[in-house]
Length: 246
Image 1 (spheres, rainbow, N blue to C red):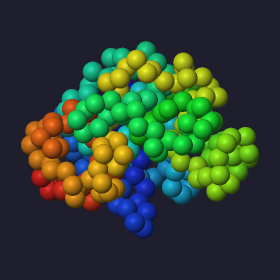
Image 2: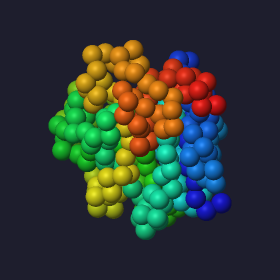
Image 3: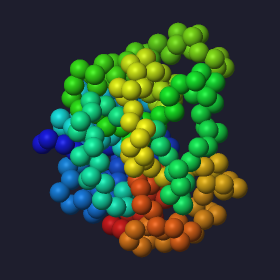
Image 4: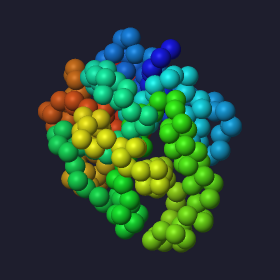
């Protein structure tokens, strides 16, 4: 298999990520019937806990060309054209998010560490990589940052108890390797709708209690058809997607 989508899904006590990943896989196959999709529930070095598993995706992917997606997402339409643009690169981490109106969002409310340290504004939830020296270097750097986070925190402006989120670690790795090698900001279609509170101007974190949604084709939020990968964030919404779309 030459190319495919990979979804990392390691369950926790609170979240059934495997179920989310299965819903995501179904949506990919509905939009792109010929697409290859792999759900990773076992990793080369075992479950290292939470975000620290992410760097293993490079070695675990069975594809030469991979698009990694976070499990709590839904693909409402065909994005196969992405490959035509991404093939030419070794690695691309997404730099663009949108609100449910499909508008590009510049909200930085969840990015204080990145803002304070003037790091690349990247979103690991959508990451493309080719089996290559540069991509291997990137994921080895991600591994190193996770394993040595206490030392990295001494370099950057942050609170002593700052957690190592995947977005923060990817951002540092992109900075170290070079944004010109790791991002493609002009490709704004390589993007997702992110349903967090401040991005969508909801009153609470749980958008499903405030916004209307219609399980049409494609999914609609407040009558807006969702045209990009949909990062629903509220994990219970995956069950509703499964019930309505199968």
